[in-house]
Image (cartoon, rainbow over the protein chains, first blue to last red):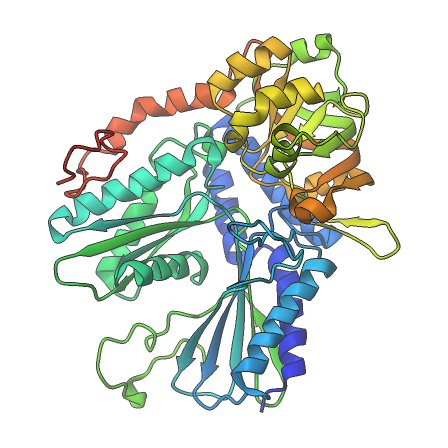
Length: 320
Length: 225
C-alpha cells in the first residue's frame, strides 16, 4: 500500500524540481546546439539560456517566469495499491500543485477561459490535467509532472494517405516556420509529432512524444527512427535559430509517436517542448522508497502494443 | 561557438533620456536600472476600456512597461517572494498599445518577441518609444536576480496575480535586446527577411496538403479540396 502522504510529499518535491532543474538530457542537447551554432545573435541567446539554467539551480528559483501549465502523468504497476484509492490520489496531486505554486513560487497561470477567474494556485476546472497509464508488472506508482509552456508551436492537421511523407514534411516545416519566427515557440525545442489515432489522441500522442521522451531516445521502429533523424536535420536546415534569429538550432530532438487511425486518414500534430523543457519523475515503491529521475520512461513496449493480448514473457519493459 | 563579435552592452535608466534612446541600435544588449512595472491585457482593458485611474504616477515612477507576469507570490507578512520573471508575447496587445503609450508615457516597452513593424511606425515612433525583447525565451532566473524589491502590487484582487500590476525596483535587470529603434526599424523583421531567402530551398520535396484550410485561401466561397 502506497501512503497518500508519500504521494503528496513526493509530488510537491517534483513540482519544485521540474520548475527549477533543467533535465540533463535536454541540457546536453542544448550545449551541443550552442557549440554548433554560428549565428552571432543565436549564439548569444543560447549562452544566456545556459547561464540561466545555472542561475535557477543556484538560487533555487524557477528557470522561466512563465512556469507553464503543470500537469500530471501517473503510471502504475498492475499490483499498485494507493491508500484511499484514485480519488485520494487526485486530491493529493491537486494539493501538491496548489502548495507548490506558492512555495516555489510558480506563476498562477491557470484561469477560467471565459471569466478569467484565477485561484492563484494553478488549480481549477480540469486543471491540473491528470492522465494515467499502466504496466503489466509492479506495485509501484510513477508520478510524472510536466510543466509545458507556450501558447505557440503546436498545431494539428488532418492529412490523408495521398499526402504521404511529402505532406507530412510540409506540415512539419509549416509549424516550425510559423511559430519559429520571433522565437514564439521558444526554440530550440524537443519537437513531438503525433501521427494517426483520432483527432484527440493524435494531439495526445504528439504532446507525449515531445514531453515524455528524452533527448537521444529513438522510436523502436527503425523506419520511424530514421524519420525522426531526418526531421531533426530538416528543422535545423531552415536557417533559423533561437528567437527566430539567423542560425541553425531549431530542433534539439524530434520524436514521433503513432497510433492506428481511420483507413482514410493520416492525422498529424506537432508540439514544441521549449527551452524550459520541464519534467520531473519519481517512482514510489510499495515499501515507501522514492527514486527521482528525469526520464518518464512512458513509452514502453506495453504502451505501444499492437496485439489483442499481452503476453508477459515477451515483455521488454524499459527498466521497470 | 562562432567567432562573431558579441553585440554591444548598454546600461539604461527606466526613465531614459531621448538622447539615450537615440543611441540604441538594433541587437544591443540592454540592462535596466530603476523601476519597471508589469502591465498586459488585464491592466490595458481595465485602464483603456473600463476607464480605471492609474494606481501609480506614470511615467513619473517609471517609463518602462514590462509585458510580464512574474512567478511571484505575496507573503502573509505583506512582503513578496519573486522567483523567476519573464515576458509574454507582445503582438497580442497591438490594439491597446497606442493609447497605452499616451496614458502611461512609457518609453520602453519590454516583452517577448516584439510587435508588428507597423505598430512601431504608427504608434512607437511618434511617441519616441522603443521596444526591448527578453532573451531566450526566457531567462527567468537571470531576470529574477535583477529584481531588488517589490514597490507595489496593484489590482491583485481584481485581476489575479498573473495579470496584476507589479512594480519592481530593479538593478542591472537583463539581458534584453533592442528590437525596435526610434526610427521604427525592427530586429526581428530584419532577421525574418534574411531567413525567408532560404525557405523555398528547404521546402523542396514537400507538397501542399490535399485538403486546404481557410487562411490558405481567404475566399470563404471557395471549396477547400
